[in-house]
Length: 480
Image (tube, rainbow, N blue to C red):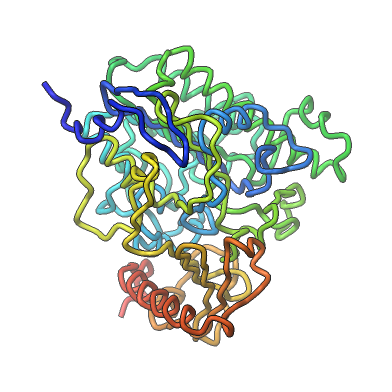
């Protein structure tokens, strides 16, 4: 019997071109396994392979050398919960009503009618597992809101938000609805332990799988092993040393997971994608952020910013035996592209009940241009400096703000009154950057490029009106 996704797998019967290079002919007998590794607040410049001068990340260096290091990889939002929603749904998170980070008890949650990547893969016969941070509801492990099992995960081992009391010896994990109590060790290693055990104990080893690893690192409250902290004696105090060791600990955990794939002899048919949910936390933004020494590298802004420091993140793609090793690509990609890409690779029809914003990257994997029907777009109402919208098309990026006199507090969870304000707002001002040449977004070319500005502003206005119209109300007093 021929596989239902034969049209995809015929791509691998002959050698083909990827980003200017060829790789050997290879045929896949089954849809690929999928591993998506998502870090928390890891900055664009925090990895050795992205230019950090002191942090050591040998395992991620190796992962990058075995695949494609993406220089223009974007998260779905500059803040955590929306970014996670965008990755799993392929949709601008405002559409789903995930407007900001979700505080414990907040009514925001990923609604039942949202179709996630895990749900689609499970329906197609994949085993599915989530290990790590969930952060897509305010009532965690409570049937009043959707949980990971409601969105396609057969096995889940998660926390609502951060590891408590810190990354060391966390006590707030829940496994398939049952609280685990205190666990000895560091969060990233615990998350990989769970994933490794799940991989080894799967009953049907021939079934494809989707494994979603969501590290708490490098989000506060940061805690790191002393043996790694001691590797950074030149750090500017203990806070910086703890942060740098935190990145290295996460790197080691990633290396352990890759070793498990090798031991189980499944690496060659496993697509691995490593990234972060947003840019790095700003040092001392709040009381416990004294360890947040993350770096945006050459980018402007950090977490909560609509400039690239808030949304451009590390991105490493490895598919052993399918993608030529040692590549670097500057093609703009986003986490909202993962759902349509993986669906095409697995031969799964795209969901049609709601608008998708991502674009399949399969042409990119075959050395062809990505055919985007719509530009990359971001919205976060609490963006720093009142910058709430960004749009990128090719080498150009637009940053915009709204017409409301009220500036929203940055970094807060959703409260009553915010959604009505969003829904009556319009975009009022724009900045324009030639992002491929001005990576630090220092030269606003709005006056020099009036025609381009007009076109991109119209696109942004249209997109903005569309997503805020779809976004739901959460508080009864907000509903018209």
